[in-house]
Structures are given as C-alpha cells and as structure tokens.
Length: 313
Image 1: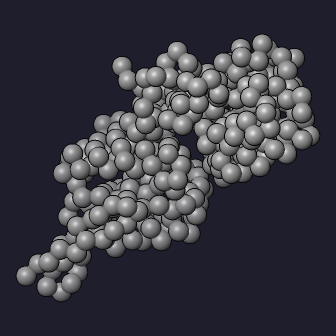
Image 2: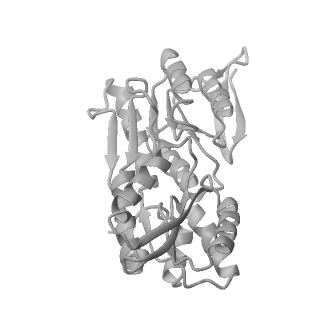
Image 3: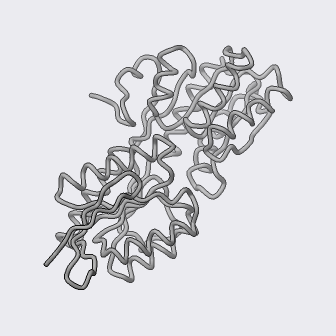
C-alpha cells in the first residue's frame, strides 16, 4: 500500500509516493535550486521554473542555497537522493559549483544552469544566461547620458565570486571610461545586498559629498543606495541599476532611480525547464550548451510594461 508524504520546502509542497518499504520515489521530479528568495530576482527564477515544470507535468522540489557552496552541495545530495530527473540551478559560485554538477551528472541527473555560468563546459547540459556585457553597456550608455557625460560617480559591485559581477563592471567601464570628464571616486562591493549597499552608500557620501551619480551591479544594491541617498536628502544623485525588478520599476515611475537593465529571469528559468523536458524525452536540447539572452534598457518610457522581470509586448 502506498501513502503520500507531503514535504514543505522553501514554501513549496512536494508530494512523494512512499512504497511499502518507506522508500521515496519521485518518477517525474525536477529540483530547482537558487539563491535566497529574499532577492526578487531569484524568487522570480524559482517561480518561473516551477510554473513551467508543473505545466509540463513534473513535480517540483524548490530549494535555496543562500550563496553557500557547502549548502548547495548538500542540496545536490538531497536532489540525487530524491531521484530528481533534472536540476535547474542558479549556482553558488562559478568554480565551487563544478563539483556538485559533476556529481549529479555521474548519478545520471542532468543540470540546466540559469543566470550564472560555471568555469567548465561539458558538465551541465545547458548554461542559459543574460548577456551581461551587452546589458551593462546599455546601462552605462544611459548613465553617461543622464550624467551629461561628466561628473563624479561611484560604482557598487556584486559578489566577487560571481562572474556576472565582473562582466557587468567591465561592460560599464568599457563605455564610461571613454568619457574623460567622468570621474570614478569609489568602487566598492556590496555583495548584491541592499543592506550592505545602504551602508556603503552612507560611507561614500561622507567621503565624497559632491558625488553626482551611482551605477550599480544589480537592482537590490541600487535600492539600498537610493534609500541612503534619500535619507541624506540627496535625491539629486543619479542612480542606475541592473536586473529589472518591480521595486526599481516603481522607483523609476516615481522619479527616483533613473534606469535599470532588464534581464529576463522568469523567461530564462522557463526555457531551462523546457530544455530539460526535451532532453529527458529525446536525449538532446537541440541547442548549444552556452546560450545568451539579450537585455533591455528600462527607463520611464517603458517601465510601465515591466512586471516580474518580464516586459509586456
């Protein structure tokens, strides 16, 4: 006689059939592993992947690694033990994530990466990421325009272990550094964190009260910087972000943050699930492992069309 046990994981209920021996069987389970859902970007990824998986008839196991490689490794063990058919992953470090992805592959479980690449190819089936360099150049061009091609500015950089942080920063500077009257006075990592960005912005303002602009590696840090600027009565400072979150959309529409760059997190996650489904059914995704999705500049002109990291037609 089989019974159903319901497990509550990261806010998601997963039904797993237990046989007479009490062994869990998940014939059609897809594991979705991302950073913390406190960041709306990662929450949108998880929700997009989960919705598409359910549409295609899969059970889902939604897990959060909190950017901790050790925890991520444990979650891979969990997915393997539960008999997942595929893993959708936004990883906890480009180099640190190679080993668990290999471990899953050796267990016969293919991984489909979203948002962040790993340092090796041929380990994951797919690596689907936003074209961070192209997006950063879009954001930098708008930032330079808003700054009038001159003035002192600061840059808030993401987590050093995340390749996206470096790619975005390079994209920014390949544009901004062409303008000799643009002067960077501070470049600090806030680790993708709103709280850290608030604290870093407070410190930067104390050291450079004449700052004119801030360009941020993601929207979460941009929101932290904007909160610090508002608290200091410096709403004249130009802030540009990167991600396309609803929070920054609202700020743009209210005349706060001036622009951001949309990377289609929700759609990328859905594409990963579609490719996982095709791979499980045919043995191939029909596309290259590494895939780039272009980003879109978000300004007051199109912010009203933005919803949950997707732009309405």
